[in-house]
Image (cartoon, rainbow, N blue to C red; front, side, top):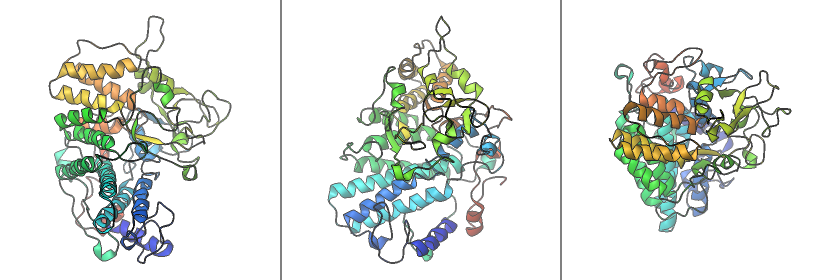
Length: 483
């Protein structure tokens, strides 16, 4: 699998003895580096190697920017401003302009596999071994899920004549070129089965893991929450509902009230986070591609006199209309989530309404921890799952938990398609600019209605293009249709 990536990593490591695949034993420096399987002979080395898997998620191609920003701009939530020319092609859904997470995700998967391979050989306590195994399996599941979202159809909505299967599975680490395999693409269901199996084991192994380190680390509750999301995408609705219930009871993440929700977005760690990617001061992505510069020109709230970022992606008129669709008798917008959007500066061109979900919350411009799973999602996952299971009264109850928290009145009497549409609308409003919208439309098989042109679900551009280098190096790997 993934020959080009491993050749690149191996070649780089021979020069720099970098993140992994060094052929000789070296000291594990820094503490988030993994050098080779021979280095994984102590608890300290394993701990550093696990931290390296977390750090892989910080890549701009992953949660540093793309997995959050690009699903917004590919869909009907985000509009590219052309302030820096970045993400304009993605906004226009041009062929080949999509997610490019293939290499970085497989890089992180290989790191996780190297740790999993080494764990039986290292002297550790049972608690340590279980914790490291659970964390690596959670991270591997997350990265495979992100690959499947980008490069494959979801089990709930498939165009059979365009379907080329899932993504290659590799469950063992690779250190040398002779270890590299050339697998084909397994079926979609096979990959989802593996993802859910990883999460099942992770939940078991993380059972005794303390939550004291915060949402930057995998926990049982985070694994249950991710299971709920994956099961929803896979059409396993009873499992999605059950694991959402377990996640809500886990004690990981704190559901916010109407009066505290917006403030939660102003703190370094969002109190609703069940899992988030943590950035230290030295890991600042910078003014070109951070989430702050991508989403806003503001440096601080309300200050339109000082320009910071580029504001490359701003909310569409349709998203703002949905946020403002419910008002009181005096014409005031009821939805408190609208407070997370405000007028930017004129420093990059036209002045736009921008999201402020990412605004240097860690105390430094362009430096933000990135929520990957928030506890609010569990209510909406369960609401949709209940609807699919015919439990409409339960679905409305969970839906209203989100609505009333958001300052909206309770819905009563909704049924059928109207109920589902309201659940999906609340998902749109709740997770706007958090990287959900494109995937929700894709798993539902819905067309994307947007300017400058619509993107029908039947269009091949719904799937990302597998890197050409991967196709050239592995004759067993089939490219997605029409690329």
